[in-house]
Length: 142
Figure 1 (cartoon, rainbow, N blue to C red):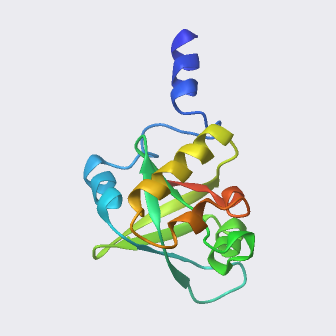
Figure 2: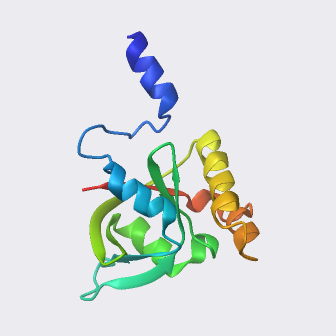
Figure 3: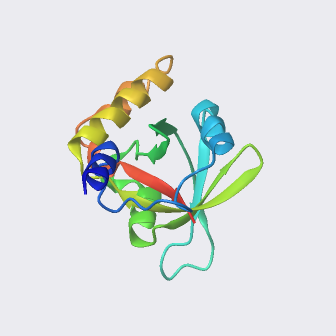
């Protein structure tokens, strides 16, 4: 029981699964260093995939994305409606599932990661505005 509690404390998302739901170290390193990714998914009722270029951060070996435009962002609404998506970067495509993050501690850690990784961008502070914080999503490979 103590081990379960410790694991839960280290990974506070209640929907966290182990095993195939974790990115390998090579992918994590690439995502830590890549400037932008494309997220692609097919919204319900659509025939074609919608793609958007977004920023990505890695916190404690978990991968996170967030909508620059907050909840009104088209890609974000599409992913909420259909959380299965593809992440495209460096000539690769990885099938993922996007899971909303509710834990305040995790959201704050993601904000710090955005400010650190994109510190040279004038848009970094926009990624930590109050209205975009609820759009934080954790990605799990499928």
